[in-house]
Image (cartoon, rainbow, N blue to C red; front, side, top):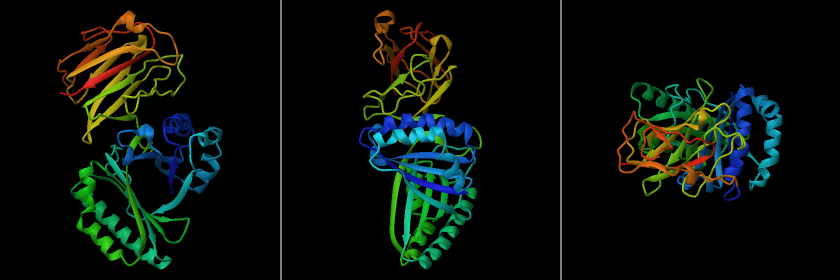
Length: 370
């Protein structure tokens, strides 16, 4: 297999526009390029609470071979359209780095594509080609130890992959994914990990490690279904506003609604209407809250795991369309009413557990935890 690490560098506040262009490309790649095996992305921790403002993004991609990247993927019509769009939003061209994986690396410990809370990318430069050979031997041995220990006693290491750079004769890399920040910190302090760095001190010219958060796009691998979770994070005030959009023929496919109070909005549903999931994160613990847009614009909030103290929802105007939905239908919601896991709440009728909005549009929803 052929591994690609890429850095995408954005003009400040242009990430959302870049991502909207990517969404169309990703649909094509998923449906038509089975040799694009992994298409996975991370946002720097610097912008953990403000994805839209990030100035860079990390990309991890896996292909069957080099030709799958340079002859198939980069030459497709959707990719050419994408490449023509992104200069308006980027500060640099694509920064591509190519690798081959070392033995005993693993991308998905349990094979279920469990989303990580944090990932770490570590770039190593050896002092010489011979020094790199020594490093690679130790990296492969470390990968074996990590894989074996995770099989016997899982400690939150979801991925641990080690690589040799194909672009030069001194580069190496480590890519890892963790269930939690705590799992990552514990892993970095393992004796075998510390031993690797101690033993490699004389061969390493430079090392740079950086943490990222998954942005909810793409797929870790093609076994099973594509990733469908969109990470949202609670504000410091322990509340979040989410834009809910039902099936709406007037909105462009893939359009993302953005507001100042939410960190990442759910994308629109497509025709026919589809179920969408959002994952709210609080202290790296998932709070699964599902939003469903059904036929006739019936919107329901299903409480999956985390109780909700209150919610409010109201229709809003979008894209310059004059709507008086607020006046027609008013605001719906429940104040100070604890909603338990397993309950489904209809959005639209004030104070009611069932209800519909009788016309198309967009809605704002505020959710607050106990």
